[in-house]
Image 1 (cartoon, rainbow, N blue to C red):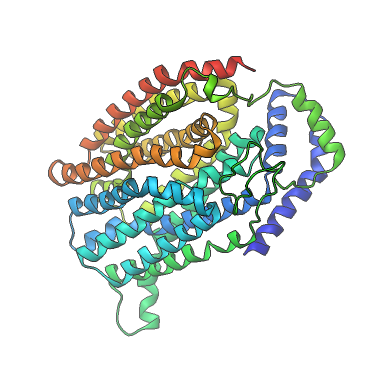
Image 2: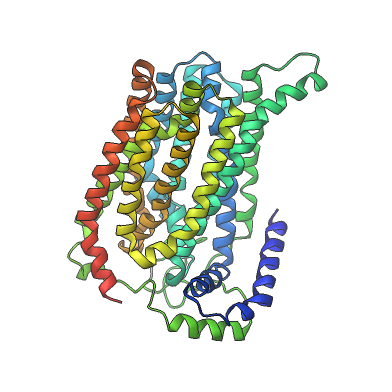
Length: 488
């Protein structure tokens, strides 16, 4: 699999080397942005590419299960409030263990932490195949929640430490885009895998396969896909340092004031010269921010604002995100295959929109982009809560999903840029803790609301939380973002 990845990357670099010289001859604004994007994306370090690919494979495996997991619980005669409790246990475990996970990630290194993440998710879903009691299911939720906590504290710091400053926005957006692409394929795979197993079962065994049995076998298959996603990590190498300091273990936190020297991807010299002239003629996309100690919004005050913002977003997301499959299944009587297609389309749109995110943030700024996209998602949430038209609700779901997910890499990079290097793992875990805690509570509440009042009410509550978060982000971070922008 790693060989296939390297072959694909080599082919891409060959195409870029063959045609980029001709492309660089054009000077329109659109082509200029495209040139910068191509140059930055193809110059990612090998560590970043391997990690992004492994993370995308993990998303494939998890998404292939999550697309039908709620339906599987319904087949086991559990109700919506049980499903809400399951997700509350998972996110609650992440919340409780985030601080410990952040310190563990800083201590043992990012790649080792990601190995533990992959193995934990494998065990969590593997046990879900064997046991159907409520107690066993909640144990699986605990294991998956703990694994998710370590993943949340590992991914962003690893990418930040293995990429150059000028390409950070591109690395984060590309990582999110590939992760969503993996989730997109996983949605389709998981949507149709149970249906396919039911159809082929009579040809393989004498007995017919029940719907619940097809879901169980699908969980087992996807669990092994999660285990296989560890293969690209075997080729990640420790980074050399440009100066004295403690050497990190596989991209862990570096106790030094110097930055690691990322491995370079070979590009023809004439391309680099032309690209350098082109980029030097443009304003700097990512100016070096002032030291945190010199900023008026530094330290604990700023970190608390990060937590409050993610808490508000988590409250809204927890009310609806875990229940989208239940929403379409109960409101429109759709099966897992149709739901998988809808989720796939949502991830395609989101992945494409994330590739456009760096250009949007460069032109309008990170905070203004975040506020606009959150406000733009509000009408689509109201449509989901009010409309009974399948086509209208599917369109609203696609737009809401794209707009809100475009914010994730932008705000993550904003946090990393405003956090001291030796605190990134800890601060990232604290911020994620606020997000997960709010999701834990709101997911549990939403399960109760859907059981007693239907699937529409949580969407109105989510709209209120998103509006509050957008206003809070504007008044809390716009001045800081404006100071950074004026420092160009």
